[in-house]
Image 1 (cartoon, rainbow, N blue to C red):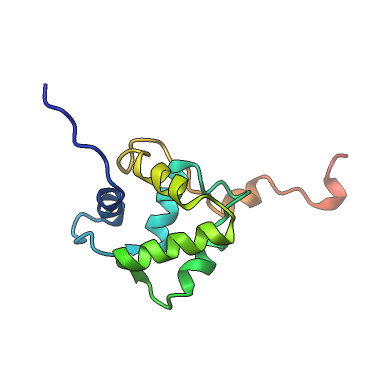
Image 2 (cartoon, rainbow, N blue to C red; image 1 turned 90 degrees about the vertical axis):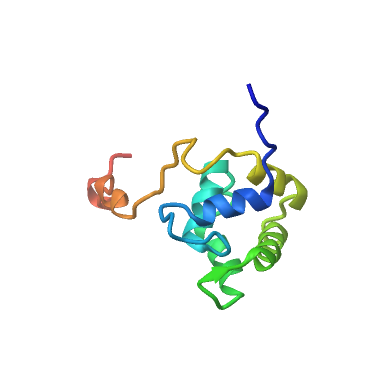
Amino acid sequence: MGEEEAATLEGQFYEFSKLFDNKRNGTTITLYRFDYWLRQTKILDDRNVTMTDTGISFNKFDKTELNWDEFLEFLEDLCELKKMDFEKTKETLTNCGLPGQTPVEVPQFRDYFLTYKPKEKAAF
């Protein structure tokens, strides 16, 4: 049996940047793909870290996709914004497994309306 190659953050960046589209070259990552990556690691939990937080940090670059160096700067900014340890976050992102190895539930906004109860009908 051959030994598995150790995961690297740059390797994970490449894999997640190609998520759902194998025709991509893996040199840039979109906000959607990064949010998916964060959901797989359970960092993006809609409580401590939200999609709004990632969007604020991502939009500082005024681009739709970030390259490797911009990604690291973005990640550092997000960690600073949410008071997370940068090195620990990088380690978590590195060791979360390949895309799709862990089921990820991406919330759909219409799910909110399935459970919505008007105030006058809400049971207290």
